[in-house]
Image (cartoon, rainbow, N blue to C red):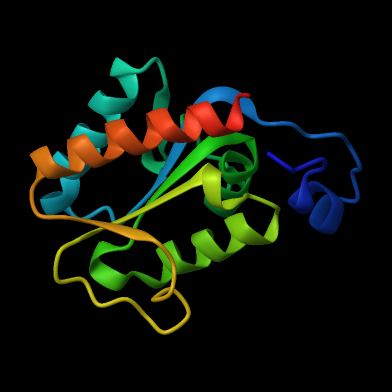
Length: 153
């Protein structure tokens, strides 16, 4: 992780600090459609198996500002998993924000269901396409294990 400060704190709240990521936290950015519940369950299960804690924004307790909570989780998470399936604008926005605050390639796992159309600015990136939730499980497990090896040297 190359992040040394919190972008949102600096830009929106005038607070300067040395924000750092939370070891083992994985923030999952994805569409909330019911048809994707099995996708999130698969991601969460695979994270748990390798002692990582996956969180999605709808699991945050309380009535805080959603955008503030999203920005906080993007900045705090050791890793991000971004599911580009369904081409949701909020997913693209949050992914762009993650890049803007300094997340590097080895901090972010991009996945999408086979057949998902990738937009022009995302198309050249390494996206792992899955054909089923079992296939997704293998991708998440293998990729996160490699990401841990690379980033926790």
